[in-house]
Length: 403
Image 1 (cartoon, rainbow, N blue to C red):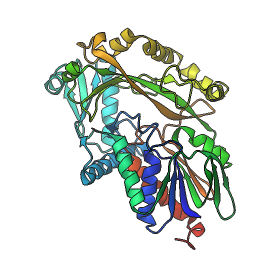
Image 2 (spheres, rainbow, N blue to C red):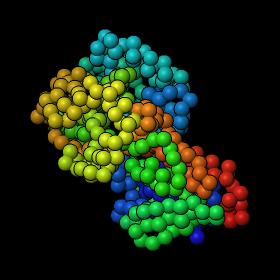
Image 3 (cartoon, one colour):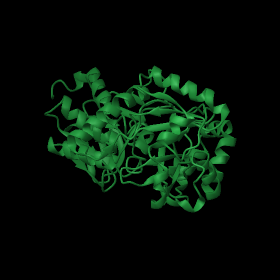
Image 4 (cartoon, rainbow, N blue to C red):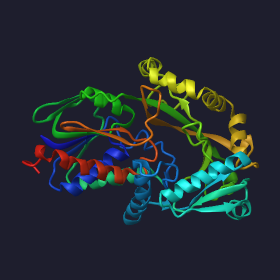
């Protein structure tokens, strides 16, 4: 019998396991992960940005956890010798109609207590000489890291406290019972006094299996990238983002310096035909049917039909993808771009067609379900882990006799 079983070995599940040992040093903890390694899906396909929290609604979990998380993630990397770079970011208005949106974003950043600066076109040229813009916001606290390396360190810390990480172990069913949670897997049954669902792309399915109706479904969106050829990396000094389109719930294509020295360009956002579909040819008929028979998806699609079609056009047209990037850096040419690995974002979508725009945690009797944790979850992972564990005392009568 374990005290805690964490379902999911991505960065949120591992940070939760780490936080459990901080709160309950003598606990018996197991992390269950279906892949052969940790951080294989959203975490391992992450762009590696340490986000500031500028985009998010003031007072939201995303805003608060990103702001706190950028500090705690940076401190963690410093303590454990993990390569990172607080290189900063610029958010650039390239058209006159974007200037009011930039002002609104600047105001939101100040409301989120961020030390950001509005800069002129001339000041932008000084720090990003190849970027064309009318004005920009400089976000000095944004940075880059390899989140797979961070996750591996989290796993090492869990094992160092005596925790187990069961790899290659797929959860097939989960049941809350009077005195325990029973988790059936492809490699036997696990029993725990509490279970924490951090299953990412499958978090809604795990919650449903445990008997909870969430009024939301995970819809997978693939983000496709290119990389700049090595000889063109000089064009990008920091992280370079456009002003977000308020009519579309994704950030738009941008330039991301990677800790490896590479520069990613992207992503677009298109429906993935498989929950873990990193290529256009990846199709799972059951996953696809689940999306296409979900009324919430069609309500979302009807609202963003024009923008969605543009994303698909960009997916199949390198020329159109390049043209979008040229709005920020006019020097970019189509042959400067080489294909790069894609990622898949697990976005929770409600039945009314609205995206769940904040982290969403559901408390069960003996379970906790992290049902929506897209970007900036990697940045915020340490803070999310703390938050999950802080809610456990609300159910402490279940654990008092043991811990």
